[in-house]
Image (tube, rainbow, N blue to C red; front, top):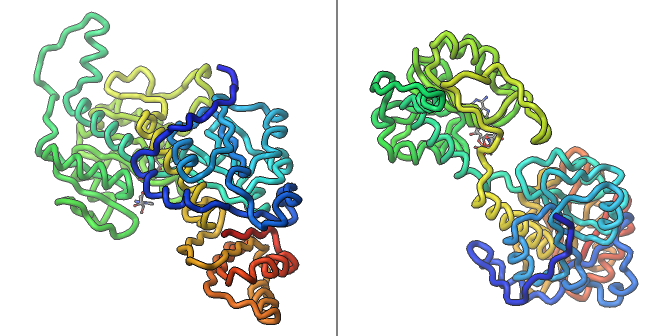
Length: 454
Ligand SMILES: NC(=O)c1ccc[n+]([C@@H]2O[C@H](COP(=O)([O-])OP(=O)(O)OC[C@H]3O[C@@H](n4cnc5c(N)ncnc54)[C@H](O)[C@@H]3O)[C@@H](O)[C@H]2O)c1
């Protein structure tokens, strides 16, 4: 498949949750960008202080879902180059030079070298869950927020786990393998309904809690263990310790993040605490499980079956051989990290990231950015909004307020958030002052970049 730019049909209609953004399409102008690493099209925009939306360039790579095009065009952004594939580094450097926004999936590497060439870039969208393919620190230091779609595939994972637990309770993976080999085992031995069984969920976040609701609708009793107190949904019950959950559940499923406290949280000791013949599922992260210990627990028949979607070591490409001590065990369902891989999830990702682009461009909202202080302030009618990204050094806010006071610039709203390295300040000022305010902001020491929105 080549990388042919595609035209966006003029009659493309927005659907679903994209609709609420349509009022933003009324805004005739979007941001004017400036700062040391800012875009070079100052000449044509300096006089009007705002960049026409049609001049804001989006580069969307790797065939991101076309919902993204719907959302962007509904919000007035039509200057979009849409490519089906990824680009090699040289081609990417050439293309990204002109882009204000770039949308990628997992194959495009946004390295320091590439970002150094991206002089106009104001935001990056990863149309996926992971953001390892982006040098997040370099992007942050250049004042570029990175957005992703961490929760768009929640339902897909919950459904896969549910399907797996039904099949495992019936012993289907083993029976399926046997029949494929010409065997026959017509027996109810080891086959169970889900109704009345206890599901133990470790990590009651987005996926765990959604699974809880669906499992209860099948008549399962749901217990869960979480590092923090979580409001139970339905009749689910939070358990005070992991050991208690392991000892009580017929099916144990992990839905925790990859953090130090979850590393190898399931080892030989934990498998031994599970009920004999119970089922274990992991569609969270491969590092949470000692996979050799799991293989031993299955071979010894202490664990009755397992479904594993994520592994401590996964092939980097589809042509690489998958190695695991779990291979060849008939009562283990192995899937290649596809828990969240459905067409619906891709469509949701397209909407979610494109909406984050539109919100950042229209109002400066960095809500849910992975490398940036989060600020989201509603737009005020009749005001101009100034965005100021600066190094997090003492005195920046004081200097801004002093300079504004000296120039009689009245600030009607101000919101600042910082992280260790940078600060992000959103300010609304009276229209007539925005030109001078922007000029003054750019002179503040520590400034990385500034924008004005109106
Ligand atoms: N297999 C796939 O394709 C796929 C797809 C999406 C997400 N995931 C993974 O699924 C996991 C869960 O995702 P989510 O969106 O539900 O995350 P989430 O952040 O919404 O929920 C995680 C929950 O785990 C809890 N938790 C954290 N540390 C814990 C600990 N030590 N013990 C017990 N609970 C702990 C948190 O308090 C939170 O409630 C993540 O690891 C994510 O990467 C996998």
